[in-house]
Length: 147
Image 1 (cartoon, rainbow, N blue to C red):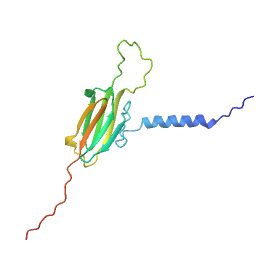
Image 2: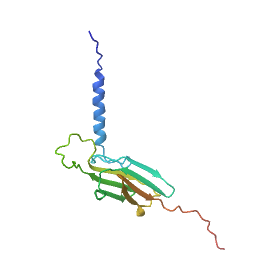
Image 3: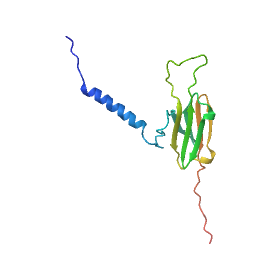
Image 4: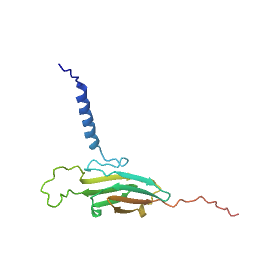
């Protein structure tokens, strides 16, 4: 006779984890986390700071640059786009779909040192690079009092 251990709370814990994931996806937009509830997926992003600029690198393979919209408003940089499902030529039906598709949306709060007027972007090999220059740092200076 085989003995089986049952964990009645195991199933309950799995249900709780699924509910948590569901509520996280339905959370309201949050500029700090860079996600939005209406997005079908969110590209992975690396952000680095250099001496004269910030660089944001987003993985968006298969997205046409004309399908990407980058805006800057009130200190928030928004990247939106759409990756469409395109079946290979000669393929009647897809047997497996693992790559995310649909609308993506990311938001980032920029620091006060970011120069919003000179932001530039380019795409290469499936990576979007957004360059955010910093303002020239104003050096303190001594003011002579006439007298």
